[in-house]
Every structure is written in structure tokens, then in C-alpha cells.
Image 1: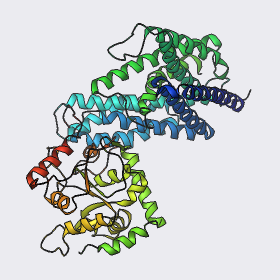
Image 2: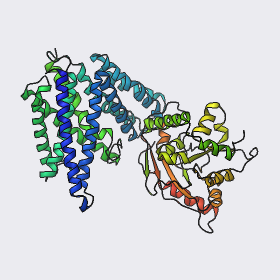
Image 3: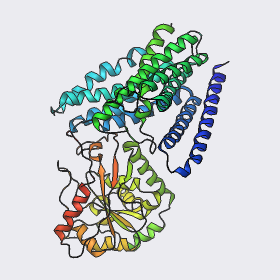
Amino acid sequence: MTATEQTLALFGGIAALLIVASAIGFVLERRYAAAGPNAVIENLNSRIKSWWVMVIAIGVAFAFGKAGVIALFGFASFTALREFVTLLSTRRGDHLALAIAFFFILPAQYYLIWIEWYGLYSIFIPVYAFLLLPIIAAMRGDTKAFMPRVAEVQWALMICVFCVSHVLALLTLDIPGYAGRQLLLIAFLVLVVQSSDVLQYVWGKLLGRRKIAPLLSPSKTVEGFVGGVLSATLIGAALWWITPFSPWQAAAMALIINLMGFFGGLVMSAIKRDRGVKDWGQLIEGHGGMLDRLDSVIFAAPVFFHVTRYWWTV
Amino acid sequence: MRPVDEKTFLVRALTMAGPIEALAAMAVTGFARLVTGVRGNWRDCAPDPRPRVYFANHNSHGDFVLIWTVLPPALRRLTRPVAGADYWTVSRTRRFFGERVFRAVLIDRNPATREADPIALMASSLDAGSSLILFPEGTRNMSDEPLLPFKTGLYHLANARPQVELVPVWIENLNRVMPKGEFVPIPLLCTVTFGASLQVRDGEDKAAFLDRARAALLALAPEREGSR
């Protein structure tokens, strides 16, 4: 199959799955409507709706190629950074540093990926932003809680810009025999992460007994974690045909992605707990914010990128 | 400069559907959403087209824009901010936005030069079916206090139209988006929370009413740890 045929086959399959899921959600809602509102069914239907939004957004971006995907993930980064910075305890003295983060560092990072300058985009935020922003904050002369403030701003950029942009950086990988198909690597990453989230939820609802991290995320269970990660790893293996990997390699990659995604979700929960919020924001009414959707992708993307780059590129 | 009279405003309100004004309004609310992702939280009252006074905390020139943005479009067209004529009449651009896009009720803040009683202007605008957005602190709050003492205008307006609901509205975070002296707004999520409406009670004096209104507004502010 050509890259286009593979992409169409993939999106066709996902759309078919979502139509089935929407139909099941609709029937469940009708059947249990008499018994009053049902939280589980409402939650399921709102998840299905947000998958539709996600699949359509990614589909449209793919149709526009590299520019479309840059626009999509640039927007995702912007929205995520806006949510993250909202929860920081920054002061007036951080205003300029934050403005630079939003209006210079974020676009610059995506520009560097656009021109495929690996040597700079992989150190731009960890080195240059890391050194520049504290200098700007220091020049403002406000020393109160200085360390936590500059650390929080750096963390915001690493999570919302650096890590998110590595989804896009997959497009720059030069893999022998895989030219022109890198968009499908993004599809692989996103599909594996999302199916892991969903399957952990499903396994947890079906069999979940023992809580895995009661202090961080009371709804996550050992059974959900094991069942979700294993079945999403199988899905990853079954998607080997859109990747440069063999089925076994695809399974191993999916396992890495799922584990990073799971622990990423826990880290982001810890931050939310500390700041006393349930969701990062309300991007679409009642569906949480951008970071609630992206938390596992954020932790998986850089690792997936570097493992693929190290073993598969020339 | 003299505020435009009520009749002119009403005529303009009716012809407001002009495409340029509508586009400008969309641009303003779109920009507000892009920077602040603002959400309206109708916590203790529901949107209602009857004339109302929304009274809010005031930290930034963008405050009424946020309230305006979260109102349902049908209510937005009926809702007019009360604003200082000195600010909104100095240039053609501001005049266009103040008079034709936001259709502000312009008040001459200088008692020596003013020709119309501000309370009468606001009351007649309520009588004409509009709702108002009012900042009872009278000026932008640049202090570290969450809310300044209220000026008396809210009390006089409440007495002039005792049947009108006064809705407290807390605007959260906009002061962090653009603190005083900064030129670039930083994008942060803002919320606009609507509280339970109140009215002047029988025999309630000015101080008691203003205290009660101020407390109702402050009660909507989220508790936050950490300093700004």
C-alpha cells in the first residue's frame, strides 16, 4: 500500500470503530434513560465525543500535511501552556519572561522543527530558554520565591512546548524505506496512547479492585493498569504495518509508549492535586483541558522519538 | 465632551446589526477567548434577558469585554457597559468601539462639567430594556486588596430601580494577564462567576447595602494559596 492508502485505511478503520462506539453509547443512553442520569454512560458518551473531535482534528491536519500538523500541535502547545501557566504561582516580575515563553520560544521551537534543525531544536529549551528566562526574571529585581518561580516556568516550557513538539519531530526522522510516511508514526503514537487510556479505563471498570496510586489518582487500579497496558501493546503490535517496525518491535515500542504514558498521567495528576484542581481547563465544555487529553502523549513522545531515532534512522 | 443622549443610543442599538459592528464585536470576543479561554460560570443565577445590573470587580480595561464575551449572544446585544466618557471619546477608534460596538452608557466622571445625572442615564437605559455592566469600585483596582470600597452609585441606582436584579460577577485572573505597566498580555485562563442576585431591602441604609453587595461579590472569589 502507498502512504496515502495506508492513511485512508487507518482513518477508515478508526471512523468505523467510532461509529460502532457512538451507536453503543446511544443505545445505552436510551435503554437506561428511564432510570435517571447514569454517570458511567454519560462519561462514556462524552469520551466518545472527544475522540471524534480528536480524530477529525488530526484527520484535517494530516490532509494538509506537515503544515497542518505543525498548526495543530502548535495550537495544542499554546493551549497547554496557557493551562499550565494559569496554575503557576508566578508574580508580576515574571511577566516579561512569560510573554517571551509564549510569543518567542514557543513559535521558535516549532520553526526549528519545521526547518528540521535537530541540533538546535533538541537543546533550544533545555539550554537556551533555561538560561535566558531566569536572567530576564532576575533583571526585574523581584527575588521573592525566585527559585520556585523560574523552575515552574522552565517546567511549563519543557512539558507544554518541548515534549509536545517531539510528536511533530517524528516527521523529521529519516528512516530507510519509510520516506514520506512519517505522519503515520504520529498516528501510531497517538493511537497507542489513546487506546491505552481507554483500555485502562475499561479494564479498571470491569475488574478493578486494588488501587495502584491511591494518593495520586484514586480511580486507577492495578487491574486496569495491567489489562490496559497489555491490550494496548497488542493493538500497537497489530498496527506494525503502518510503522517501520516488525510486529515484535512495534509491540516493544507500544509497551514503552504505554508505560511512559501511564506514569506521565500520574505525574500530571500529582501537579493537579497539589494545585487543588480536578482538570487542567475546560477546552470543550465538560471534557477537561488540553493537558488532560495530552498528559500521556507528553511523556511518551520524546522517548518514542529518541528510541526510533537511535535505532532506525541512518 | 458630552455623552450621546439616550435616544441616539437606542436608534443605534436597533441598527446595531450593521455588519462592521458585528464583525468588530466578533473580533473582540474572539481575541478575548484566544488569550483567556474565558468560561462563564453561572453559579447562582441563570442567564435571563430581563434588565439587570451586573456589578463586577475592576482590574483591567478588558473586564467588561470578558463579561460581554461569556454572555449568550442574545443577551450580549442587550447588555451595555457603564464607562467613563473621558476614556471612550478621545479618539475615533475608541468612539467607534465605545458607541457602536459595545454601546457603552458613557458617564462624565467629572461632576463639575457633567450635564446629565449618571444615575438617570443608567436608569433610563434599564427602562429601555438594556442590562448594564457596572464597576462599583469606580476605578481600576491597582492595590493588593482583592476589592476596593464601593462608590455609592450602585446604591443610588438600586434605589432608583428597586425591582431590577443586581448580579455580582467575579472576574478571576485578568489582572495577571496584563498587570499595570505591561504592554503584552500573557495568555492565561480566566473565569467569570455569576453569583445570586440581590436587591435593596426595605429600610436598608447606604452603608449596610454597599457592605452586603461587596461581601456578595467577594464571596465569589476563589480561595488561592500562594502569592502573586
